[in-house]
Image 1 (spheres, rainbow, N blue to C red):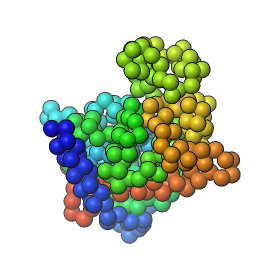
Image 2 (cartoon, rainbow, N blue to C red):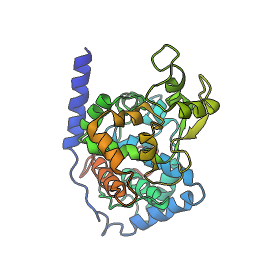
Image 3 (cartoon, one colour):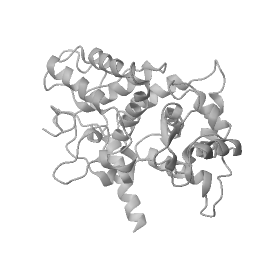
Image 4 (cartoon, rainbow, N blue to C red):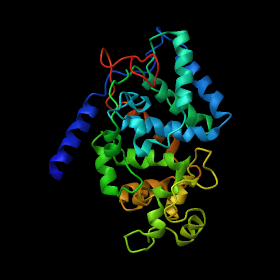
Length: 321
């Protein structure tokens, strides 16, 4: 039964990979030429007041693309008793929906019924990163919005902070993302916060015997224990202490010191290819992270996109038409 479920997962994900063409840079140049300026100005308005919104906007795009492809399904509210992706535990801590809604409102005034919510999300994620000293990249556009959003799919398909390297490689690979994309996109953990329950097992009960994770620096564990008590479900801590509001390469420095917050961060040191990449980003003038991140984000942003007459262009991002 487990094998059948795995094969079903892979078949679905391979379909998403194959259905990834049809987006292009400059897609709206005739129908809504100011789209990028409008989204950037809206994103800037919010990020300038609350820089911590950058991380959840980036994560929102990531979570959208990993479930049903980049179709804006993570933005949909539950309807008629059916719970949507937004309600899954990994998505309950997402913030920044108001940014997407504000950009959509402005674009509906500028060019009604033209720009999809999934394209707005892809642009806002890029702009949020660039506004906190991160890289920028050209975003291919032309996605349409999906009509389906299911809580259980988000629960099953999203990578977790508890995953080992083999699981991560399988999850990313099924969507057409390679090992380099995996280690590069993990670098997004250079910004943002996390709840204690996402890593507390590493502090208190790693193997079910009340032990600590031997792959985590003991001094770091001691620091984290002062903030996170057993069974703490409310406290949040910085994923990249000291620079969690700035997009930089410090995450890779933390990983090499065995201070990556999640088991999935520590997993990057268990594979030779990902470990080599982590170490290569420590050189002040030799880092390729910014360039690589933009390339992997473009690649991720093409997963399972709906184009042509598929899907719809939502009038409101939280609701189907």
